[in-house]
Length: 423
Image (tube, rainbow, N blue to C red; front, side, top):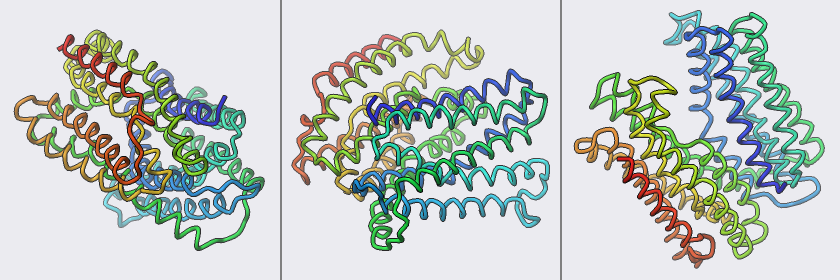
């Protein structure tokens, strides 16, 4: 197993654990209200953290210099701890008497417990990237099995034993402490404990645009939700939300592959990295285009059985979101991050958001919910096209070097025909 494959395996375990936890909650008798509180806390924690965690870890991958003991690990850890403390403080402020949520003490009690999870889990994200950069593939896979196995048992176990959400939250905190301790152990083994302000400055200079780009890209989902709520009622909003979901494995494995290749670009150079990106991205295409086409053909059968007949209209939105596989499996951003051209990614992310929002307003009047979904797909494809052109013009890297264009265009035509067939 290569380090990149191990990181993909780790990300699938992460997704599977949260997905399975939700299923177990419903089967073990947790109330809908309690499940809603748990999901709301995870969502809020993600909103406050996803962009800087993504930007900082990608910056580490681009700035890492292989050594037996690396100062990059320790200094990155300090930054992660600092930002995790800020998010922790934000959660603690929600449970003060002066908070706008102070009139809901039953829910706020869970915020207090959950705040310790966000405190410990942020710095723990470093562990998988230490193992990736040290090319400890088996260690990374084993760490994923242990970390998410502990989390699943710690969170679902108390519910199975007849306890409530508070005990499940304590289990979630305990699992984050376990991961934090493992991270400290990896730092003791692989990090040079030396404060380097020059590195931190360079690290943040690379990370800043990546954080902004991730925040801009993530904002599209909320803007689309705002547009739906403005033009439609609550029932239609629910239909849209249930349909506006990418096939998760495409996003997970594509992002893990992209992150795993960034240090290869930085260390081996563009020429060697492009060969691997082209070869491995083709493997992803062979896997995910057929799967996406298959889901497209059966989505109208799945949705009413997975949910109920009210959500059969969600399948039409889901089918459009499946078209995002066309843009997800092309990787110009990987090369640009490895080359530390992160401002380019930020600027193009801003363009993508603007196009997405403008097209959503334009298309919603003519095509309804499907129009909003198509705006997301068009903006995503445009994002990759602009990055490819920028990479060619500024760095001289031809798209054909890293893009298996014949296969990709062929698969794109096939999924386009499949969409035409089901509509």
